[in-house]
Length: 335
Image (cartoon, rainbow, N blue to C red; front, side):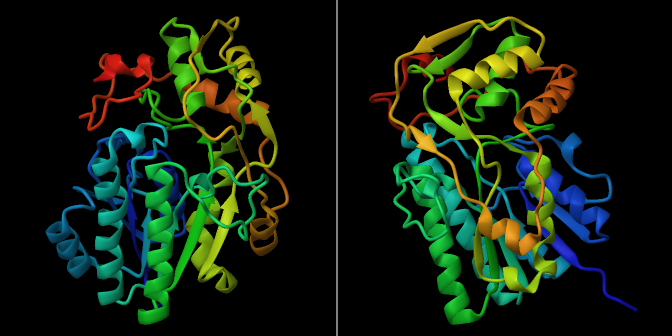
């Protein structure tokens, strides 16, 4: 009788993680979701998955569940992915995004996990020439990107010394159903939709000429969840997501249209950020056989249909600020 694969999905109550967990349950994996629910929701977790409440920084809890479930695969998506805010919550960023990851890597080596699948970010590239390719030398400009790159390097070191196989994905600006609309610091499409639902103007830092490519969740999660079935993806790094960059200003008009309102925009003072960030995806298309992706206008329609049904939380997310110097004025109300 064929053994049922057992997979751990960290951050599986969150946006991308819950979609990965869904695809794994459909593929008949026994899925254990670990999430502290700081940014996710229990309702996002597939009913077929086993939920464990807790953080990847809790090494005792991690040791307990590794001993109990004997994972074949680890899909590590737990992170707080707010690039701009990471400058002001540095310790929180490194504890969650680096130390927590190292806890998982140690246990994966000890328990002979077959594949460690890590969701990194194109934030590792910094302000290098676009489009970014996997051969572009990373030069992250914010603590979030630094943290992600540190974990990438450590996975490569763990493979060289201990034989831990990995696959690293660098997605970017992923959007779609189940995105956290209550988070004021990340995911610009979700921010715009929340502001529209609350009858507020859409806020843009600077003139809105910054360019990003926006990736629909359905073009990302299936490949993350299925990479271990393709041998040549072992110990490889992949950019994954949409190819076409859009200006943030143009995006705001598109979001307003899909939400059925006229665009109401306020321009805030510019902040320190990479102006142009988008990737080349030839490698992932070749190795995974990807032929088509969801156009932005279609993905926005799907997300807007879902977003209109979402009940927003009355209170915004609160963080313990570690540094306040040069904090954008518009963020001060959250601290």
